[in-house]
Length: 531
Image 1: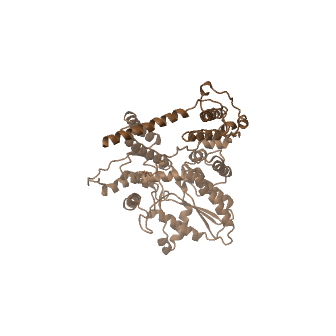
Image 2: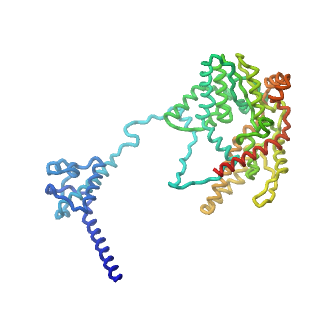
Image 3: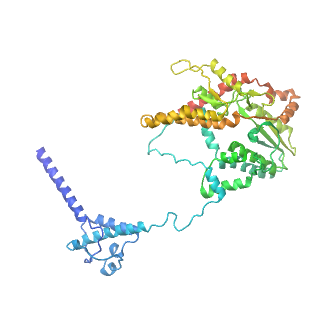
């Protein structure tokens, strides 16, 4: 019985498939057929109506279908059609509904092809004028990033938490944008001066800049203000208003986000940050002539020396990325010159100098600049930083997950960036690309990981190059005068200590700063991983 029941079901299914095939065959129409006269009111069978309705809708969307095909209810309306009305010989014996379905499909296809051939240009009838010359120059300097790949709905792509060097690179990518840095460090000064002039009882305006607004100049760098429109590159003029207008036009019309590093190098500064800081100082000197202004120019800020606790730090800064990369065994080589003097200053000394400067110049109609630096009084050679790093890891050896001690390997140091770049290309990039070309499918996962590390290390070297080979030394005459006046009161000198001569660099690096930087990086990695 079950077998007979199965045979009957299969036979009925076959009959249904054959009937459907016949209906589809009857609905297939010639490619180009004109509507033939048919009695009004003749309708198609129910199974064919969806096909006819679809063809009719297709012609209406194209917008050029004959009126007689789409909505004709009489021969007079059908006569308004612009297409030929010749009836093919093979459709003479077909029913009226079949001829109308075939004609609708054929007319819709013909009109659709004609509309595609007559399609207007991409931008319509409006002709787009080319951008101005300054906008085209900025476009050449822009960073063109590919749109990110979107994961399928419901997928979550998890990536490992970034280490110190990766976090520093991500931060640099966020702040390198010229429009953001210009709006914060330059246009923000304009708004600040406008607000300060509306304050009747203003006693002090303190502005924190950076000592590296001096660019890559060599020799003794004095505590003097910038002239308005002055560029570090000789015979060049820096038009701040034109730069602000350029960025506004790029954002409003072309909606482009671009880097300003090439723009900074054009005027003589190493990167976007110091360029926009220098322009902010120019505006402050130009717009704030009648205001009591104090400008603080610190060098590379490191973790605190004493207050609120030794080694207090909030994020990975400057040299910290080197220590973290060496701790993670991702620093095979780097750039440095042992004879170059590095200018570091603890963060609490910068705060103390700011507090004392506010108290000393309270309600004075003058503009004073302070270089809060250490290299002029207590120089720190780059070789001492390297030795201190090795000493710390010798006292605090690293271990693997199995508990084995990791031997300390000396980092290969290059005194020129070109040598470092050539070594990295020949030693890592060329073998990496060769392996990727030979084992594309098997090596793709490792290739992406190693190539990402290579890119991060190269970017970090480019970021540190202006400071690793810096030949200048900041004059701190005003800072020493301020400290001498503060040291006369022993209570103030103990509470607000900003004398760089009291820093023992070797002890500070080994016992305070390097362990603080590594601890902060490990804690941030744990928090990011748990989140």
